[in-house]
Image (cartoon, rainbow, N blue to C red; front, top):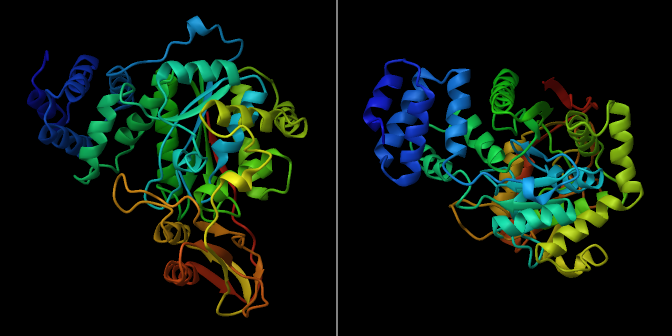
Length: 443
């Protein structure tokens, strides 16, 4: 290392700006092991108190990216733009499963490096791994080949992509240094930059089920990620969307894959989910130059469903990644179903007025659909279905309209989830309007 780690830490601790060389050196040291976990913790805490400027955020993000492989697409001779989207997470947010194939059907290439569930939020990788045989850990070469041949591949982060981030996040996670916008931005964007993207669309959630629950904090994060990604050369837009109620009728891994298949087949869909998909997809098609107007973008996306091209892409991707060739024709043969599927009725009749989405999402974890310890096995069959929307009437009694159906492995798990669900949903006598869905677009 050109600079001593403690020298870099001291400069940031004292409020000085760090140069590109400082940040590149420190990131390289994290990846090589020359920088200790204590020094990573000290650096992260210094950033918590003194923060990073926009230029420092750009330089740090690029430095983390450059600790590993950056995918090069030139030799693949792709005949369309390279695009991806990222969500900060929520409950019932299976957008990637639907939007990715739709965009690929519209002529763009989607090399998506996705994550597992975190706390109460579901993860795209966990959802896809509920498909028997789907391998999210394929090599980078196979990943790129499938993207070229199918138009999309969705994989988990490999050890050769932004390795400094994995080590740094593990330290931040246990040293109360996760909640810093500059560090969050670098962690997310470095992996996207490593995929060799040209265009990126960010879905930044706000509301009680979001990582950033306050709108101003969500907007600050969205702005930071847009600034950094654009500063690093990727055309990026962020859409701030609501997560004060679930985004779909389902929450749970196999349930959300099944919902994605139904959606791409053109069957009924949750109106808020549909609108978020079209909003994000429209920005992606405009930013990548495929269309010039929002109207044309929406028409193109909807046509990808009506013509069957989007579901065909999904089927090809699933099979290319190791999944069954007839998943689309026979999803119930492959997607596991819970042993117990029972409704949860409200304790009083009325209208849903408020949902504690964080608590509702935690009920899926209680069922075994999420993790309480890193690396733990999850049950893909469990979750919630037919979740009531805000403003919807629900009624008590066995013949009434339930709050949702709980898919559980046993009665005890069903009861624990049901109790949490009852505490998560507020009922009023009069109907209320649903919450705002799209709050802002950051260019």
